[in-house]
Length: 346
Image 1: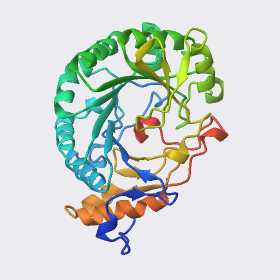
Image 2: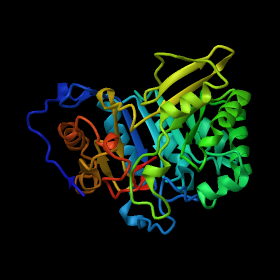
Image 3: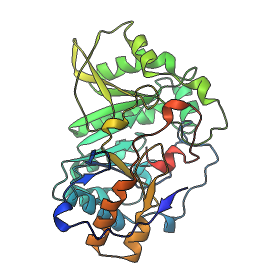
Image 4: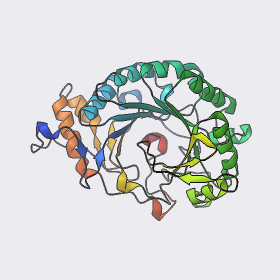
């Protein structure tokens, strides 16, 4: 694990602290913040079923998260997505969202969830300033859904989807991780559900993070191209140039203007050349790449220099030099990292 606490660079002037840019001239405008590695599900592509979670003292406090978020916004980041684990199991999560949502310069506050807690939280999230919501939904078959999530109940998530629609977010999108022989035969059904509910949907190739004890990733890999071919058996999908600030490539259907169909393809369609994202893990590691271990320990920075915003911003600026050109996911479906997705931030 390569974690570094960089000293501030004396060459960084106050006037340059207005835009994050890496060594490859990519501007970083999007920060994904994991607020916990814990979850009430145990999805088979996210973690093993015997996970050990971080102790409370190891994770960033809500105040520290807000402070780091403010620093990034002052450096030009305009989109923050809150993730986990499952972010809605973090105590006082709504107060964190309220504080982030009030920061000047933030244009888009988003959240990714498994949907289990949305029936209770959806109105409060909308009132706190969350504009866009991503909901994981990998199967519409109750028994299969439970196998994929190990603990989840499909109806609970479907109730959450309905609550999210009623709450009036600017955008609600479904995310489906597709695995061969697990749920690849449901892609048409999942799209039909999204169309009926007038929701966007993204189909995602599995991220090869962490060793999974119950299967061979190479055997379960199902590419975006295969998913697209399956969908084209019934629907005419038209590629678009639309962007959501993330890595998805989008398609439209002529007869269903309300729905976009996205593909997130870390294996088959490397999107590193346009990467505008960095991730903050629950324990305060600033990950410069999803598929590499280049990182900086921001927890140490905020705890050894509390209240020093300039030091924090200078450290973040210097950290951009560590952002690699890309990941190695395309080389193999076997993981090169032992860090699980719930530890990374979904």
